[in-house]
Length: 186
Image 1 (cartoon, rainbow, N blue to C red):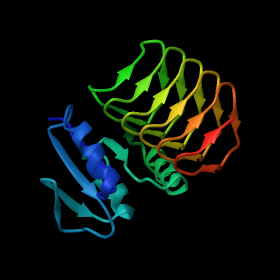
Image 2 (image 1 turned 90 degrees about the horizontal axis):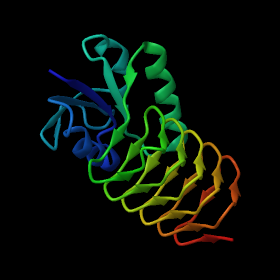
Image 3 (image 1 turned 120 degrees about the horizontal axis):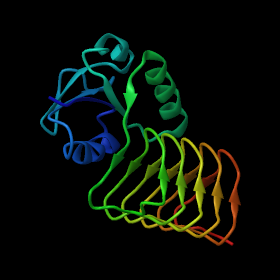
Image 4 (image 1 turned 90 degrees about the vertical axis):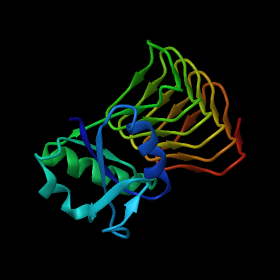
């Protein structure tokens, strides 16, 4: 039986659950605010700091927290414990076989990842986002829905790009940037 822990049972965690169900038979959550509850037919069995106690009964984990810095912290903790931090790619996403998607990232339905695009560790690419060819999104970044990352763009670590944004050809976005919804970076 394939078993998975999802860290975080909020909105992002519930969205990740839909993708995880494509591959896992048993899924549980850890979430500080929802212990003892059932979220979308999955039990919240404990708080986030109980992650260590569930290893090695559970070997696979996914960090489903939207805050980039907190997600990075939890990713590092899970890695140190020895978990296999999985990558989730919706079967409704379009991902080139020549694209690279690293550990712990999630690609939501109808996202497009073109050839030679590179998605770092622990990134979130939301529904209907497009990452054009040769773009690079570094670790722990979040690209919201309906955003277009044009060719040869470089997005550095811990960056948040809001919904309906366009990052134009060849632009470089510095580490920790927060691009507001609807912005066009020319």
